[in-house]
Image (cartoon, rainbow, N blue to C red; front, side, top):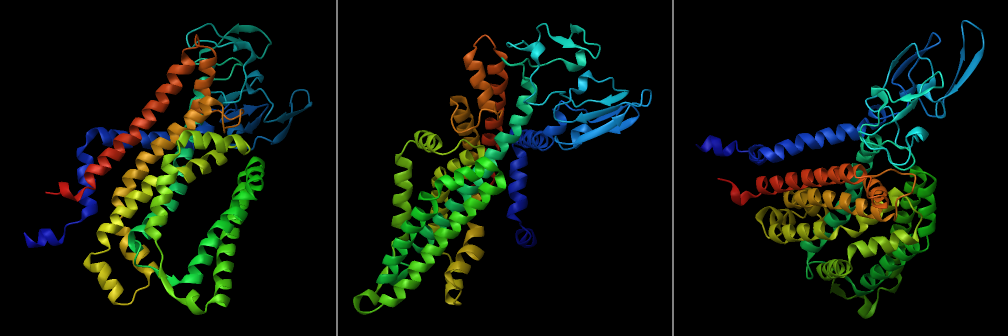
Length: 441
């Protein structure tokens, strides 16, 4: 019996408890399927073949860059034909051999012969390589219908999976970093554990406000323009803003050393918990959707900007969970032992305390991913934040709102959003039950 207790692993126990929830286990497999679809979306839905043999030339169009150009010589006539991959209509070529993706359409492909909201089971037209307009072959049918300009709905749903999962992961990644750090500092130090000279305290506050002002206030358009150009440019501008905040903060703290005399040198308590708690209350007092819509209306429309905004406005729940866990464990023996051995506060927080406080935080993150996906879908539905040329589940719903008779533009995207949100919520609830030590028998 003693050996069994010594070999107990909470990770194995939690996984065993999680597997007992059959619905959550099925949801975990479905989440894996969604991740697979998101990763391989360009090869599942694409208007270019996976493999084609054309005039004795072997091509792999779906795996090549869109700007690629191939020069092909017709062996029978010796005429040169130039294929530019992004504008070539591959269905109009007399391909000797071909393997098409599961959905032979890209999300932006406009089928001019099936415009004006063609229903999934409706009559669909097709122009064959001979230039004749015929009934759509079974292989090229729009199985879930089209929108008003002939874009395939199934392709939009598949590529929208990538956008939705990316929004959830990136937005909650940002929220997790902010929430965990602030919650850990608030819970560990409280209001009476961190002391510093009075002038250093004042200049630290000044450095935070000036850093945010110069880093984000004056550079908001540079960040917005960076993301509108490319992802790498936007990340670089965001990194520069964070660097500006750090440099301003450090400069203010260094400058405070020159004024460290008299009463300004006296040490005072830093109310870390009060600052973080009041910040959480302030952010929670503002309707989140209204705040996100307001910020999105000011900056350039970009999906990355939307993800950053969602991340910077949804960290409060994670911070509260982390703070509560740190308030619980900061009085435990292993924390006190670390302090008695002279460990620094940063080592005690991030190496010893934080790993023991993350279990309930993971549950909050799982719920937060579902919330972020829902917020992005709502913004896309309202036509805010996301560019018009980007196909998301919310933008497809918006198209359905414009024409209520096109029921497929409402049912299928709505079902995709419902299933994804349900999957994350069921996994989060199962994680909450599995990681709750009070349920351990």
